[in-house]
Length: 73
Image (cartoon, rainbow, N blue to C red):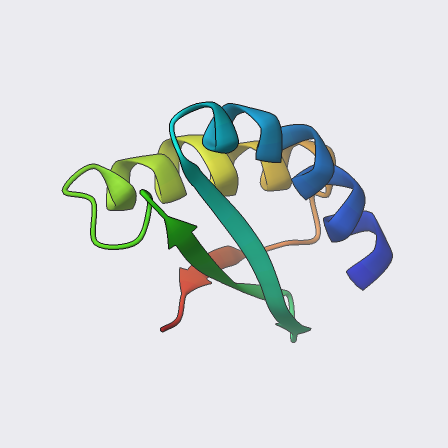
């Protein structure tokens, strides 16, 4: 499943990079994806919205087995 997640993140990454941010896959375990927001995304007041409505929604849509996405530091 990790490879599938990486493929989806490749599609999401350009939108984050356009705003000076980025995303890194930390791990996939028990249907939970852990990511690290980087650059301008790290600490941004909108990062929780980006994570839930952008990253998590896209991953769940394309990989239905995923239950949730969590940000780690």
